[in-house]
Length: 469
Ligand code: MN
Ligand code: MN
Image 1 (cartoon, rainbow, N blue to C red):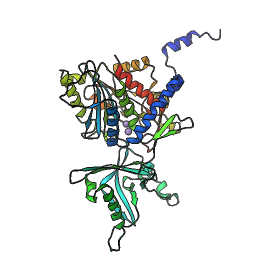
Image 2: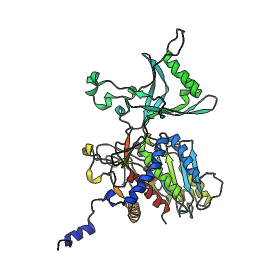
Image 3: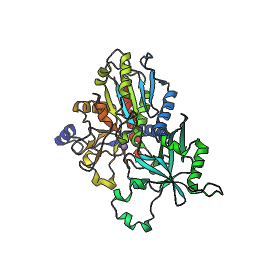
């Protein structure tokens, strides 16, 4: 009989892995839910290009959902929701569980910094009637991608009088923007024959910021530069010396947009790693009274190695958990050693155009759900925490039980390169951790692409992780 499965087919079904169904396994209703979830995500992405803005927007979201600012000596009960900001650039959200952190906490940890171009401490100069900024790029970028695209300026300036002023210029339609120039093809014979690393150097990423001289009859030098400075002085009350105590970043000035005729994907700046941060925030907002205290932590400085007091290597999160443990009458290290973490970071989605960079069997694919990376790092498994078989098993079972689309993968072919996440710093605190995130196309480009259903699956994964009994 044709529709009766052979013995071998039955055996195969029982013990062999089958091709993941991916999005085909989702109902229309679920796909609609994913699309709806992503409306909020797109807003988050547009309002959170740099870490300070991501923190501000997150605090706004969670305050509306009833989160209160954390006080170390306040007493909390199950269901209470708090947020705790670190220097305006990282933030912890916690939902107090029925058992507090007595049996450990549940952690979802993402980062909210993204690759970009920072201003040098002394950036402004004039050359051949143009005013320009000197820059120092932040994180791993392919420099040519940042030339000849509109950029906006975001950040904070601290003045000598102790006040700070936030800068945001270039996003609005009626606002001017900035740009790194590139050489015209007609004169680029030499440039195009160079290897990419030499064709575009960090020192070439100079940004055009003005071209008209200050209106005066006086015979002075650098009038274009003066004109730019006087505009900044009028708008922000800053002087040239204030650049020394500023964090100013150039980021793409275009808005997030749906991608594809079917509007199935989202293109935008900074999916890495806001695409994991937002689902982890929403999971904290939506979880009601969990068993264990649930913590979403959004870290800064991941793109440059997680160093510094706002990066994942700082003791901020550790001390926060110690504070929570004190309330529950347990030692902080005891709480940590029983904690479990999903390190929420993106991975590279298989790109058919660059197929040779990937190993097809161990890659993640757009619309196949969240990707679990047992380890990241590079050739020979350096610089990574390798999640234990036992913890992988737990996470796998949790996703299966809750019908969450998931896949496993490595970044790309073994010896082609690599990259790390903050998982290893969490693991160093004696916490069980594995990477779980969203596959991204064109990762670290000014315009990265993700699929809407994958974003929603990340939310579902973090939610069930928090909500698990
Ligand atoms: Mn990342
Ligand atoms: Mn990254």
